[in-house]
Length: 357
Image 1 (cartoon, rainbow, N blue to C red):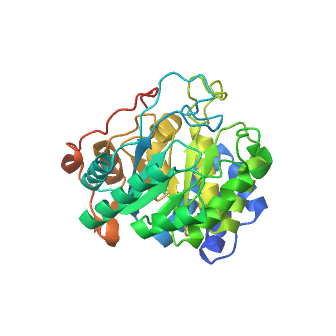
Image 2: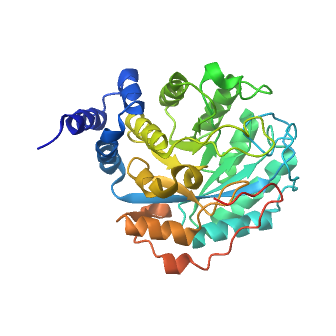
């Protein structure tokens, strides 16, 4: 016999699958679901995920192409020069180093490789390096390319697309209302404009945020609805892993069950979207990490920008154990093989503070 709770969440799933936009009230109800209903909620979110993504998981790899000394004051980021975070900076990686990073991503059977710089926006020199690397990577492999380089101009966005960058990441982080509590050196609207420029240049848009910044529930709902209004292609959901020396260093981590509720909410609001569990996955979800694959269809592997996460072998094992498959560039679907990726070389460790997850 189906419980009333299960029936309620599956009715929501059926409406999402049918293309009916999830209302703000229904999205709020997901965030407020009682603990006793969490498994039923996850099952319903999985019905939506399965309809659009089947049992496939997409792996993504980040490469910190230029670390530290960022002039922006994002309160969560240890790479800002305005905070007292321990560590330092590293110069822009060479095109050779970025190409080698893409080779590691291919060896890990990742669908996408993302080059990231800590900066307000790309200088012409940095853009030259990213574009050269993109052209060489595209000539060598079929891996999809993403870049996260800060604020763009129309000309810079066009150069990236012409070089072969498929997708541009520029997270909104939180609601427009709460944004100036987290960042003061640029506005939420500045970020929206860069998303628009990336799309107009022909790139897909990867735009998400961070859960656990001290936002109210309405801010999280505002973020989800704003991303739907922008019709973004990918939504990475990060969970704050407080960095030493940043203004948010003392924030408590999100509870694992609340993190899962948030992922379910984003899945209902974005039924067709590439929904990714991003930074903070390992330290916030802890032993419930595999359950994130019920609402989400993709994850980062090989760690993050300044923290070390799960290895490709560990992630392949998790995906295999849960009965999922991997989707490679071009749409090929394969069975995860932890032994095949166990020898993938680890990326060079950043000089910035590294915290093991």
